[in-house]
Image (cartoon, rainbow, N blue to C red; front, side):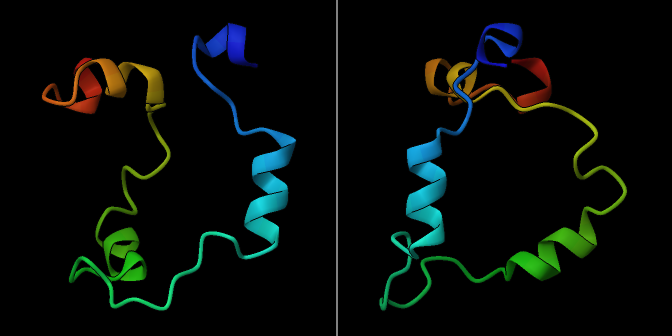
Length: 67
């Protein structure tokens, strides 16, 4: 998939880490928007366009639809 998308695809090791709750923290949230609220507000467009992570790393200013 990585060659097709020209992007990094999640690895088996990353999935294992996610399943082991390694991305959890006891600190307070850094933002104020709940993911569920954001998802409801953006439901009409959520998942309709692919966001290339490597392109975002090269250009953090351009909107995702221009990467």
